[in-house]
Image (cartoon, rainbow over all chains, first blue to last red; front, side, top):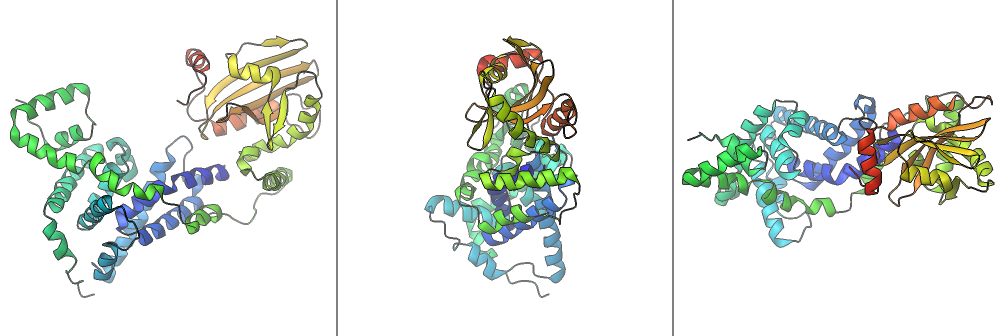
Length: 177
Length: 255
């Protein structure tokens, strides 16, 4: 059974990486998240119910680990890291100019949204899950998905339209911890 | 005029509305430029516009550390004991030798009975109508067994000389393959139950083939083994006769 699940998880890795990247804002932290997600999933694989969607289950685990991490970071007071923001602004080796620019803009804008809104955009707009599936992953009612997602999209759109805002973000100093 | 909330407008942009609701929204947008403007913000942040930028990641090679995490994660020191565990280990070693995923030989511990295939297969191979053949380390249905699996609805016994072959059920597996349980009577004393799945090449890979009579000590009742394996592999329910007929006629497309 687990060998079959391992195979299916390997197939899911590209999507998980994309999801984690959208949440974390850079590839390295994203891959750390994916790695931890895989380890956690496999250590409690008996909790996954065959017949239900493996991708939804894995996304939920990834999202929970990410939220836990964010909370821990907040406690430590490292709200924003200029170096990380600058690193994410253009050194991850992708060279497809236009989509890279879009990628950077969206990634930068997303880091300014509240955590749950970022997760919603990653699930619906980037992974393409339906509202219903997203509600299952996040364990919230579909109506809540819609209201939060609409808010997230208005926010994201405003940030993307007003790119000048983006440059000021990078110079915001971290709160003293 | 209907009041269109932001949520509904967004659902419209995302293609999440029913045809009737779509129609209502479309009419409202046509009459209200403010709505059209708002719609633009949801389209701009929608799947078509945002996802593209992130798609590059999907095509990058996955770092080895992640593949290793999946390979190694959750492995515990062997807890399973007894004969079945040993058989499972044999299969794993077998699969290592053959360089195929272990699950293709033994999807679940219950399939450890698959080891029997070796012995039975070599016997079957000697028959004029070869039913199972080894191909690239896998056992593949051939002859009358292949013909029945590929073309015959469940519950229809087909006689070939002395033999009877019958497909018993059809289901879609979690491995994303069509699978069928079958029964095979070679003569009065030798009845078999089995499970075969249709691979991407269109061949029927035999995953379980067990003696239906527990004459030998090592063979549990074949029915249980096959039914257990099928239950574990199955995604959803076995197909209804009509759906199965349609599937056979269409040449086994994925659902």
